Length: 216
Ligand SMILES: [Zn+2]
Ligand SMILES: [Zn+2]
Image (tube, rainbow, N blue to C red; front, side):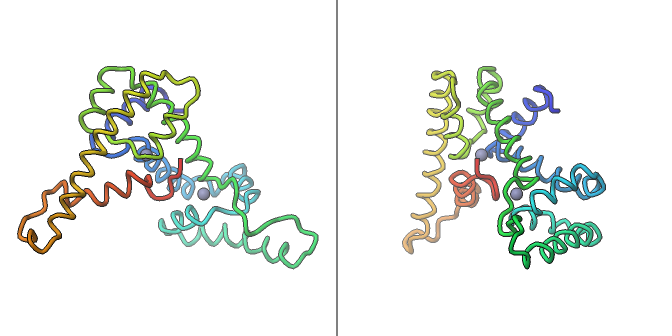
């Protein structure tokens, strides 16, 4: 179980990178969880049973896990998965739906972290240092901003502050995007792109859509 102090530290430090601290922290914990699973989870009967029950992993997480290599762990897991396919698919009475991977182990991990960090962000925003760090360098993505807006019983004033500050940040991002458009015009192609402009179009994708595989 993570302590409040750890979450506070992590979110604050991630804001310094200029990204969405929630996306960045959820992604960090996922990457950690994938490695830990290959190191320990595969030999834990409880975890293995859960994974069999959810019929393997969703497409996104199956490929994230495969990117880490580890042929033996994959052979052990997929030997079981494929055995189940050969047992269930030809059986008309089988209730196992091999086209669905609902409740994927890593989807669940991501989901619960996402919930916790989103709520924590709103709570920490009352701390002046946290708020100041966000104003200076943070940038919530659109899906996480909307998620904060939808938190039940949230302090309306705090939410408005977060939304207003974030809109200023989006405005600044859009100025960079406008500059990219302008400088791509043949009349201005000799003007150099700034470092911020070089990053802006990628930041816009992360901001509008969240990090890959994260759908709050
Ligand atoms: Zn985000
Ligand atoms: Zn998943």
